[in-house]
Image (cartoon, rainbow, N blue to C red; front, side, top):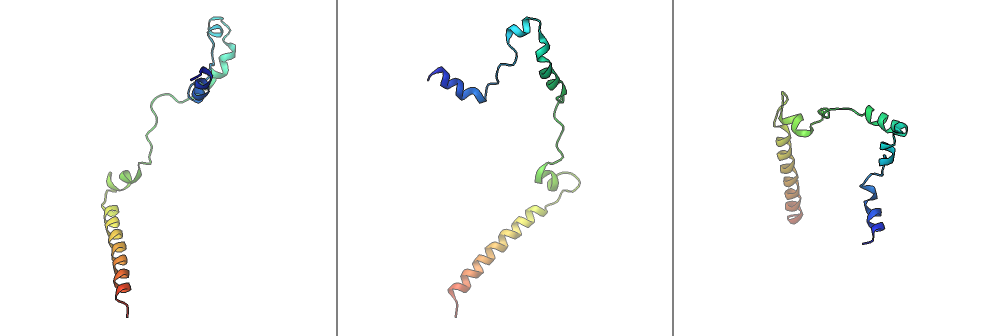
Amino acid sequence: MQPSLVRRQLGGIVPPKIASPTLLTGGSGGSLTPLVNFYSKLPKGPAPRSSFGGLKAKYFTGKNASAAPILATILGIFTIGYTIDYQKHHKNHAH
């Protein structure tokens, strides 16, 4: 592969050079102030725990734990199966 093709493919993964070595060692750090301001405003520490835990947190853990989703799923599968079987039975034995 040619280097330009590789560079073009990796362009979205590898960030562009923001600070060149000459800018950092030259002592003129004034052009980096927007970058420093951006990173200083980012939150620090671990991410806060999300209150949206999905179905497991909503139905199976904590004070509201119940088997309602499992029973509703079993009942729904039974109802759909019975309906399909009922339709097949009456379709084959129609008068």
